[in-house]
Length: 329
Image 1: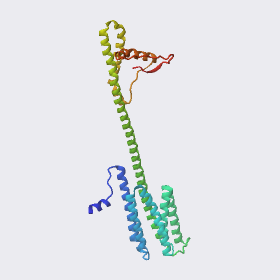
Image 2 (image 1 turned 90 degrees about the horizontal axis):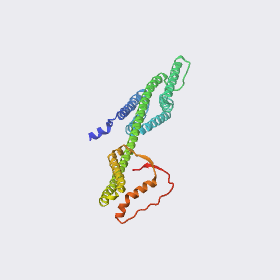
Image 3 (image 1 turned 60 degrees about the vertical axis):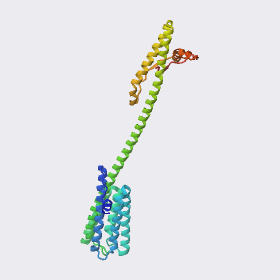
């Protein structure tokens, strides 16, 4: 039971540096919020003994809700927590003004809310300018009240105490904002790293698909070459047999034997160079040749084989064919 509670409370452990940074910033922000809630919970009744205790309890409850959102809500949780924080403080200002019949303690809370909103909406420079102007105005009102230049009739407002609380809240606001900005920046970098990882995974998937395509092409190439090897070997055996029976046709069969031998050598060379498929390239011997002449040579080479099986081969040449460019082998 205790191990489960400890696992629930303890922050998650990440090996990645960015994830560790996110975790540390989350824990820092959580400590700030809890410290702020505890400070209000203890000091608010001391500052104003007539204050309602449910006010400090409400702040503590808000801090606990923010703890859950920020601890387990991730990037979206931080955004929601910012909205919840501003909304809860504005609600507290409204209730405090209605219950207390005046502006007691409202000035500092309102300033805190407006400074956070300025930081979120205007950025760091806007928050700095807003904070400096507010502090300058506070000192002007404070010393104006002391010197008699400014006189306030509002009950229960002590501008000396208000200035001190303003300084504390400004520092607290910048600390929270600094932590939130670094947290969001770390999360952005983390999402960017995950996006790059997804892109690399997609590139790897595409590369694997290309490798599978090359493997399939290699298998088809081997099958085709194996089939093509049978043709010149069969022709060589057949013409050797014909020369044995008809030596007088040596001059007729010798060019055919030479072509079949060259063709067989080209096929063997292609098989030896099959490793080039792994590099995604096959060297082709491109040349211009007459297509009719190529077909006629093929028919002449295969005629004896066809006749031995009781078949005949004939071609109808097409005149004026243009020269073609390709690998004649």
